[in-house]
Structure formats: structure tokens, C-alpha cells
Length: 322
Image: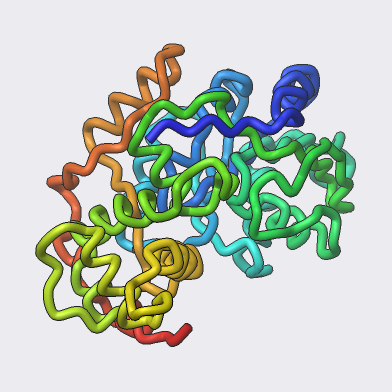
């Protein structure tokens, strides 16, 4: 899957980030905790250079907690980088961010010191605007469930010694990494008109069956997951009443239902990417100016096998009704 979706304001945003970056003390990059590699734009790493960075793994409530913990350890291997999982609407979670900023830049942001200038960056629809509003304690940025909501930069005084620079969500011009493009589309980071929902749903369903078969079977009351994923998607549609006149399944309605429930966490706490030796190598290549990393479907040999099994939290989440 190759997706070409690059709204005009993103090109302008890149120029603005380059202009402002020299004045910034620290960068907060907001990632989707379910797909931290695919939701990380390699261009942003190049633009920030050696500046300290906090990787925010947002939507932690939707991600597999064991995998998220492994991602925190993975990111913090890099010098000058800290990682923190949170839910952008949770004030207690978000309240840890200013403290971490001051800890990383101790000579700014405290009483009697110069303001700590922080830039917050991320691709569309990772919850950046929601995070900003929670940090500010008031509505400062437009919030929506569609990508490209923020279209112009703004500077926000958090009134706690921190000046926050917001930027529009920034994707790379052409996403030619098929795995990453698929996961971005499935997560809702890309405009609906840029991909085929039925093909995307069938492909992501294949990944979900491989990683979380019990969650899929329980959510959709399926007895068997063998066979073509399009047929399985059709069975999901049949059970959920996605039918047209004559009783045939409307695959597009079934696809939209699956994608909608995946994005809302109705399937359970799911992570689409795990750190392993290949993502480590890709991350190193990325800093060397090479193409974007390609997430691997291979399992991390050091991870807990319980990751792909039903946990009590997952059981509770997967039984939540639409």
C-alpha cells in the first residue's frame, strides 16, 4: 500500500519548524502508543537534530501495556531521549510532562529563570491538540477525530515557566513503506479518501489475527479464523448486520465497522508494532539519513509471551459493547 496524502499546509509547516527550531530548548514528539515507529516521522528526528526529546506514547489506554513498557525502554536507549506513556485527556498523566521537561532542562522553566521553550510535534491525529489543551488547562487547539485539524502554528504560554510551540501534524510526502502506511491508515492518521477501506481492513485484520486471535474471536463471536481475511471480514459484517438488499454483505460497511472499533479500542488493548532488533537497526539508519524504518512482524524474542494472550484488562475491554 502506497499512500500519497500531503495537504498543502504540511509543506509550509516544515519550513516553519526549520525556522523556529534554533530557538527551542526541547522537543515533545507525540506518538501513537499502538504504532510508535509508523507514527514517528523520520523528518522530525532530522529537524530536531541533537535537541533533547520526550517521546509521548499517547493513547496508552488503547495499547497493549506490556508492549508499551518495552517501547519506553527501547526509546530511552537513545541519548537525550525520554519516553512517557500517557492518555492525553488524563490530567494526572499529562501533569508529569512539565516536571520531566524541567528535569531535562534544569536551567530553565523554574521561578527566577528564563522560560523553557518547548516545541510539540507529531503526525496528524495522534492526539497532539488534546494534549496541548490538557497541558494548558483550557481549550487552545482544535480537537477532532480527523487528521489535519491543526493547520497553522501557534505559541502558547502555559503560565508555569514553559512556552509551548504547536505545529500542524506533519506526514512525509509519499509513504512508500507498505506496512507503515497500512497501520497509519488503520489508525486514522490519514485522510479517508487516500486509501481503500475494504483493502485496509482486510490487511489489518490479517495482522490482528496473527497477534490477537482471541480478542477478534471474542469481539465478533467467531468460531474459526482460518481462510481468507476477506471472507472473515464478510463474516464479521454478516454478524453485525452490514447487509445490502438480498442479504449479501456490504464489505465496505464491514470494513468501516472494523476500523472504527479498532480505533476506539473496542477490540481490546492492541499494539500493532513491537520493538526488536530490526526496529533498532532501522532507527539507527533513520538518524543516519536513511529511509523510514519498516516495522517487522517478527516477535521480540525477549518479550513476555502473555502479550498476545487475553489479559484481565483486555477481557474487560473486549466485552465492551459498541
